[in-house]
Length: 315
Image (cartoon, rainbow, N blue to C red; front, side, top):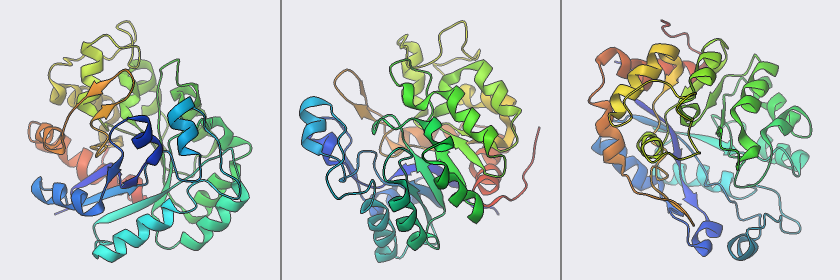
């Protein structure tokens, strides 16, 4: 049998979130493995939290400023710490670490750090909204980061949104990056905010996968009428009170290019305006409601194709 994957999880610490009163702000790899064991998940893709220690946590907490500290490089400690934690727990056979990147700052220094990690890491991850680093910079100042991934045949995971107040990670820009690097396997996160047009466009780009990370929170945002997700005129037709049915509707478009990810621990999100509380158990319970073929595509065939380039099934 093929292993069951969770393709979107965070491990580490976010001092900026903690000082700002945002949650969650920490997760240990041991906790992640215990969640996996409790819910039949064999392997997980994981990466550090979003606001690294290279930035001024107090300025972020008190004034919302994103300010690189003197002499520091984005994720210069977090990527190393993640690998060390995985090795210390002896779970390298279960956790696939992605190195976090910033395409706008100190790219050459990041590349030197990534060269040291080229063996242990399984790919790259960009969460561009928190560090205010436009995803399109992967085509300019940060192009070397994608060339690094292409040379080593590593996959790349991009945070993706349609929210106007998050201009650094717009789905259109993420898709443009993927089209510019057809040899790289991209995963675009969060179901593309359930935007039917974006989902159909993604289905036509062979090197693009999409994950469902934080599904329950995203469905709740639909029910609340939030601008973070697609407006009714643009939204995929589905019953957002039945998250499993939403997964089936998107799978009908993307097939095994639609991946299951919990977003642990960010299936919950509490900031200045939102309070969305869900658990790993809540997310995993949705899987049990899916037809076997959909579950296999999202949790096994699709993840292995994205992570390793193995050919899977298509609709």
